[in-house]
Amino acid sequence: MSMIHDGAHMVQLESQTDILDGLQMFTRLDSNVICVEGEKGSGKSWLAQRFLNTDKKIQTLSFLICLPTQTAEQQRSVLLGQLLSDSFCTGEETLLESLSVFRKDQECKATIIVDDANLLAEQLLDELAQLVLAAQQNPLWQISVILFAKPNEIDESSLYTDPKPEFKRIAISPLTDNEATDFIDQFVIPVAHIDSDKKKQAIHSAAQSVVKYPANLLALSESHKKPVVCWVKRSLIALIIILLALGGWSWWTSYQARVQDQQTETDVIESTEIKQDDTGTLANQTSAATTSISGAESTLSEDQEDDTLPLAVTDKTLTVGDESDSEQKRVVVPSKVVDALLDGDSPKDAKVSNDEVTSAQASSVQKTNRSLKGDQLTLADDALLAVPAERYTLQLAAVTKQDEAINFIKMYDLDGQVRVYRTVRNQQSWYIVTYQDFASIKATREGAQELPLALQKEQPWPKSIAQVHQEIERAK
Image 1 (tube, helix red, strand yellow):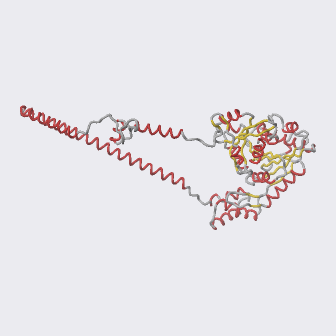
Image 2 (spheres, rainbow, N blue to C red; image 1 turned 90 degrees about the vertical axis):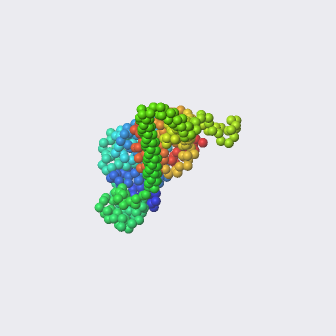
Image 3 (cartoon, rainbow, N blue to C red; image 1 turned 60 degrees about the vertical axis):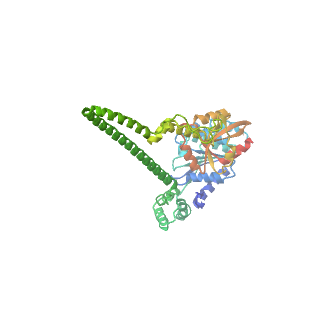
């Protein structure tokens, strides 16, 4: 088996290659039930992925990733959707009944691969056994079932089918010392970006104390990974600190200005009160002189106040350049804004205006990668054809009408997250809703488990991009 990772070279493991050769031999000679048993982390999913990518002689492949939340009906529908992709199956009939109807007098060569088969429904395990027994009696059929599970999780004696098919068992053993060394040097160390000889030696030493399964060896590099500097995160933190500092400085200067204005106003009031008291005392002593002096002071005070006051505020607006109303637009500055600017505060009206401008700008941004334009469905044939054929995707739904596809996308709020393409089955158009694309089966399984529970009940199943390309070309 070969293991590939971004930044790592291909690793050929002889023991895993022998298992693949055995699987190909069992599936090509006759119809069989093969159980591949291995502990957690032994590479069962890698084997399944490699078998899907290398066996080119199989006409039909059906792949099922078992999940704890799946029922027998959901698992059956996933398998039938791949085995009979050109036919419409309700999933209410058994696997054998459906194939007997649609492939009765036709040649049928298929391999069914089930990952995490220990989660397979007992009823469906019986149906798979019945399907293999029927294929052994039909010269036009050759159907094999490969079950990837933990040791002793699949027992053929628990089947209700009689007679029971013989289970071919293949055990996944730990890697040999030489294979483990090659795996660490060519896969684990490049993946972890380790360049220190001391760390490399530490990983090799730690490998002697663990069971030499691929997952266990990969876990050794977790404590020795080269730290990745996230410059984006640091830049955002620095930007936030700068904005907080600017905001604090702006608030402090505004606060100091308000305090100074309040102090000035208090001093003026106290000075006025003192002058009034002095004037009252002087009036009691010399009323006549006080009256004349007060009149003179009043006249002088009014003249001085007229000189010191600013120009009267006018409601007229200012214009720049030509004052012609027909050619120029006047810039109007409301009085509230002027008062707020003089006080050093942010005007409420200006804030509202800025919010409105921001909202208007946000509403004008056009969203991309949408599956819906209004109430119209947008097909993503070109985008899917651009995806490499060796990748995988999750099929969420298959319907015969555009309205049904639109309702499905709106129901689960999937606009912008899915890609829809059209294909033809039995001279009828079908609209297939797909979710993202993944580099491996493991990533596909993780993607299915991350979907909302309501969406998982719609029975999403993995589908190779190569098959998607074929179905798109079929509709052209």
